[in-house]
Amino acid sequence: MTTTLSPHLLRRALLLLASLGLLAAAPACGGDDKKDPTTCTAGTAGCECAAGGECGTGLVCGADNMCSAPACTAGTTGCECTASGTCSDASDECGSDNMCGPKTTCTGELGCACDGTTCDEGLTCNGGLCTQANALFVTLSGGDARACDLRIKTTGRKVKDVSFPAGFRGKMRTRDLDTAIAVIRTTDTAMDGVAVGLVFDGDDAVADGEATLESATCYDRLGAATTAVSATLD
Image (cartoon, rainbow, N blue to C red; front, side, top):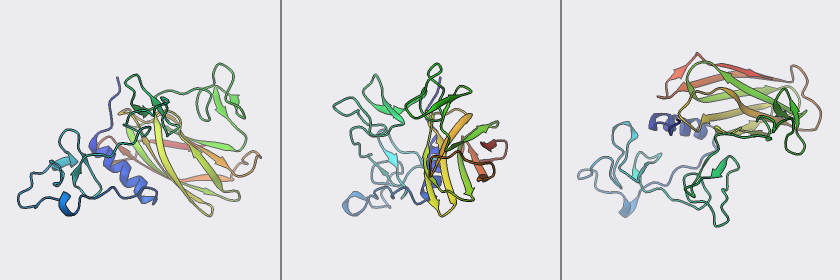
């Protein structure tokens, strides 16, 4: 059985993504929404988060360390599915409860297991994995990581896109030939297997030495750095 990520890891994941400049700051409780700090009970709406980043039922701890009700847009993660039963994020699926949540399995997509011996259009099945000539994969193994901060350096072509198989989610930022990727596990289980697919400009195969994994800093379920994780790029 899998469980949702702990508040500690969620905060770490948000920090990783924010460090790439890819997340907008969470709406702050200001003006009439922010209560007098001298009479505020930590963990309640409009007040500071309680110890450990905890808030009362139905509330979330924002980037400003304040508890507030989350805004929910149909089709987004953790919210109801759209009227057509779909989700806006390709890595989500509409569950039996009509709520959008991260996929836990996938077949046929880039970085996912082949559907038998076939893959989605434009992809080929190679060793049981759906791939394409201009793609490389970051594979994680060992340890008990729930989030990783990756740095990729290329010598020629740029990374034009990234994909995350079911069970993983993240963001990318590319500057010239350097690419930063923050990836998190969507369930409270250790990272294992292909976590990121890198798609390069052009259609030619990626040559040996054209891209290197400069660093991989990973964090456990409590948000503490761990060195037990092995990360490879191939």
